[in-house]
Length: 82
Image 1 (cartoon, helix red, strand yellow):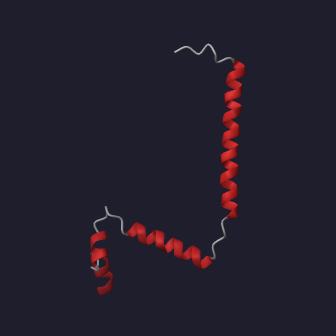
Image 2 (cartoon, rainbow, N blue to C red):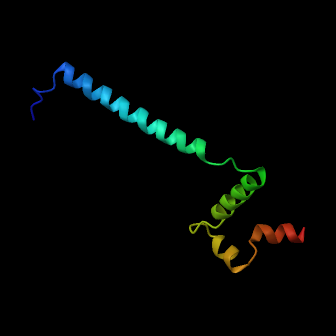
Image 3 (cartoon, rainbow, N blue to C red):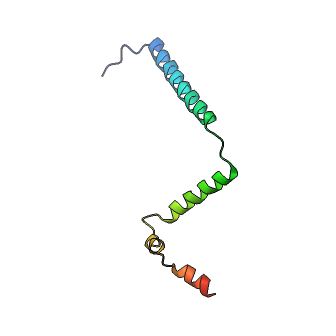
C-alpha cells in the first residue's frame, strides 16, 4: 500500500481534523453532564446502596445463591452466634 498522497499538508490536516472532532465530543459530553440535575445526598446514598447490593449478588460468587435464597453464609452464622 502506497501513501504517496500523504504529504505533510494532508497529514497535518488529518491531525487537526482529529483534534476538532475530539474537542467537539468533549464539549458535547460536558454540556450534557452540566445539564443533568445534581443528586441530593439521599439520592447519592441510595445509588451507592444499589451498586453495593448489585455487586453482592454477583452470579459468580458462591454466596450469591445463599443470599438469593435467604440463607445465611457461614461467616454470618458465626457472627450471629458470637
